[in-house]
Image 1 (spheres, protein in one colour):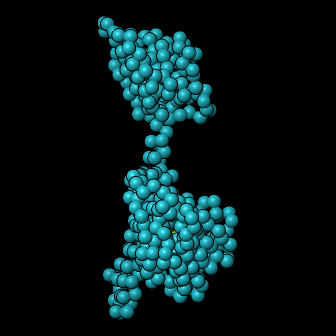
Image 2 (cartoon, protein in one colour):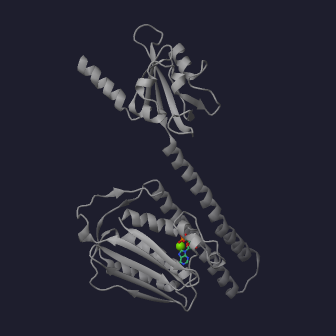
Image 3 (cartoon, helix red, strand yellow):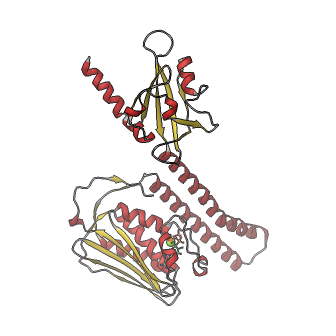
Length: 370
Ligand SMILES: Nc1ncnc2c1ncn2[C@@H]1O[C@H](COP(=O)(O)OP(=O)(O)OP(=O)(O)O)[C@@H](O)[C@H]1O
Ligand SMILES: [Mg+2]
């Protein structure tokens, strides 16, 4: 019996959510470790006090859990279990700001019909709410961003339907229409990638990646976008492999090269270098383009951030590219850096660990980046 009680006590103490046990007068009998951390009360100080001294939990309508007409007294009187989804925990000893929580009160009977005690479970829902809020913000921004190309698409298709046009005019409009559809497709792909990254639904299938073939594919893919700029791709034949995933490395480099092209004038040069040192491979994308002002640097990798610069705003873009780049580089165990001079050009550097420098039996991992 003694051992069983110890285990029950341990279960109570180590339960991963805040637990408070009160008697039928709503006086605290015990408070577990998470409860101590959440409220800032040591269990020895809380025991013997009215629960209302320790907990001020209010629902959005302002009803206090421990008030005479609150959920705790009702559960103790009626013997029914009470749950809420959202409430706020105030008067914490740990911080001035209320914590967003959900709670339930479960009456406990030893003998007879009236409850002898109740256990209050409090769950800190801040992380869940942050995820929901981030998803809502992404949805809102995505709908807003999709509206612009969609409006253009509608306008173009109306022109095509309503006017008698020459074959050349029709072709021109159809080409514009195709361009807008491409833009929407890229945007939707980026939004889905961000949503997978933010919810941790993306994993890396680690294997040794042959850099030479990735570099060739990347350079071939961006060449048609150059339109008068030159691209120098320089990667030694004998580059050692990195530990990562070819598709993700491809996505990282295409994003950086697309930016180098977008934010520079025809006639300038873009250089793409890859070289190895003892522990890592460094990829460098440099351009002679518009550059980035100092004040924009700290926010470049944020979702939807675009520099407030007319030379940037005349190109289309959503501001998701670098967020995706940084998230993928982090997942691959690397780093990304940027150096730039406004009006002169920009250099982005990605550093990824060499395959030999990392364990060969790395498991699949899922990483959420925020
Ligand atoms: N090579 C560069 N030269 C100058 N500015 C750059 C360069 N790369 C990025 N930037 C700045 O950083 C911002 C964010 O880049 P990011 O790739 O995230 O978004 P974007 O290119 O605007 O849109 P997209 O989501 O289509 O990539 C750009 O809007 C631009 O202001
Ligand atoms: Mg971009």
